[in-house]
Image (cartoon, rainbow, N blue to C red):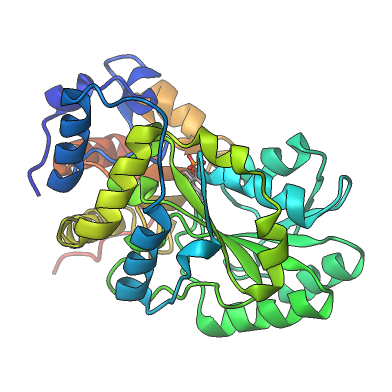
Length: 366
Ligand SMILES: Cc1ncc(COP(=O)(O)O)c(C=O)c1O
């Protein structure tokens, strides 16, 4: 995988590279600093050459995802159980609208991706916090929350920001709890294609669920607006069938084209990316050792740092932009996006270590 230069990255117009000044190294929002897969570049260039920028026709998207899910995880997806949506969080909102009534509570497990706190309340479904305990789901507390009337568990799988890949046993236990209360899981699996060496991703389906997915995180397509909502099993199918067709009108045409080709022809590029991310994870773990539990998936490192708002301090003192832990529901932490180049990551880690020196003392020489 050719590494982009810092100069090339600084020319980008996306939010990651635009929000802060040119002296700041951005390691915050979940965008990747890599070039596109060739198959994606080709499909986008051809569309632009045809002036083909009308509305999306995402008819093959379900089939493309079904192929990907079968090859990577052995999951049999019925394309007719898939609904194209504009993005993952729009899919979460649409699923909640058909699965729950206004006022129904949604369990989330912080620290977690910050829009999980905001999207359910934005459509009248309050969130109920059941924090992770030592990085694991607190199943007894989820049981209590569902017993007291919460209707849905919104699960990040793999988990953003900790990078945990849930085991089949953990998912089975959650499924038992959820069925006991006739509730349902919304499984956000957008990071699953980026499971790193050492871990094996288990799809939540066919447990009782609606699954949200996209090629957007793995192939860096977030700005093109395309994701997929998938009925995880027959229990939720009637609700999924009630999602109005207009929902799919929010899909971006270029996003649908890019998702389809990435999910169909992108495996070799993705394998190369995962090798790169594994190397970048190694750099983070070597530099920061005791400050994190190494992530099992994706490109996010969840760091324990000795200030309430360490990202604020790092931006001020070192001109590196991380995501603030408090935004995910936990202070004294920051999330570092290592989906970048060796150059950017090395520079950023050096700066970070200036403010927060390694905790582990080197063994004395001799
Ligand atoms: C867990 C999780 N879900 C959803 C998203 C966003 O997806 P979208 O932009 O498609 O809503 C992200 C982005 O980082 C994420 O980490």
